Length: 396
Ligand code: PMP
Ligand code: GLU
Image 1: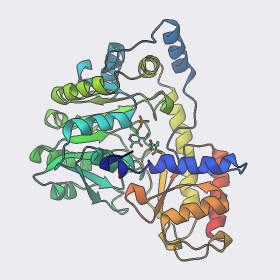
Image 2 (image 1 turned 135 degrees about the horizontal axis):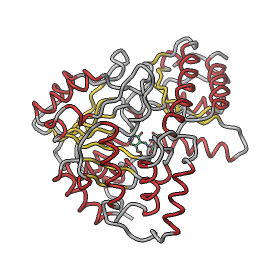
Image 3 (image 1 turned 135 degrees about the vertical axis):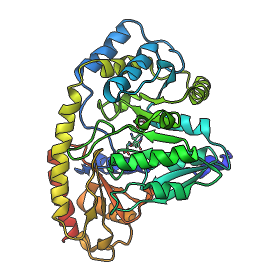
């Protein structure tokens, strides 16, 4: 059959593809040290699962309103008031099938062919693909390790043209872990207002911020900034709920209306049972967040200590999320375990998987060739053994 041009050019998500490759090897009986997918290894807390069971018993197994049940929209609006002192009406909330779907909703609602979308690099693998799916053009603006992988206000201003439709900000960032300093956010917000450029602020890692860094929602820098901001977030990372597929947007009324119409045509509604679980996640006890964060903090410190001790690797310390993103290019062209030599990150990851059974994601699809991503959202046992193997792979 003829496949459309736009889909023909679409590659599978690099993170999901890397995880699938690791699973294939695992299926042959090999023990694989898996650091690919960015998803908490913890199970969803019991009280949240109990709320889902109650929802099923209560017969909440039907279609819901297209943009989500009123209880969940109210819970989202209340959480932003409680956590960030931001005032949103429940009517400004659209619940969708995960934050990835929310991003697609925003892009489809705002972008059309000829539009440009500014994306600081390194960026999460799906950003450019989702922009291209709308026929718009990703404008990639490289950030540097020295700047902690943060886009500067000057870089933002310089990338704006008459065709700029949106800037996609990811704070804290996947894959770099960059947690933007408040003054940088203020500077970016000033540029957005001066130039009237809307900002999609992907804040999915908002609760995963480490000592020394601070999270501020992009919408919190004044009403004029809030009017230009579309917040994207969800329950996947903060509450270990990746499989439930619940994300949301908080947006100005006209954008919300567009996304509502889109979603009613496109998916009818997000899963009813997951929505009730998400209500409990937001309204119920919040202790699970600091508990999981404490574990991630411990793992982060360990991973960074080990990576620092390996000569030739370099990185910026991640202030948030659960990734270490490091430059391995000094190893290109040098003999590695098994006598292999590689000259790019993709081959580096393949060799590492084949020789040492350690699975990482290559930086190329994050817009950062030469780098690799390690997700430390996995157990300390796996982290310790995986880093031993990485070290041995590099120093055969
Ligand atoms: N944004 C970023 C930066 C992510 O890393 C992810 C990955 N999960 C998402 C959005 C999508 O999250 P969800 O599971 O809610 O679709
Ligand atoms: N966001 C996660 C990651 O980067 C999940 C996989 C995906 O949706 O791409 O690994």
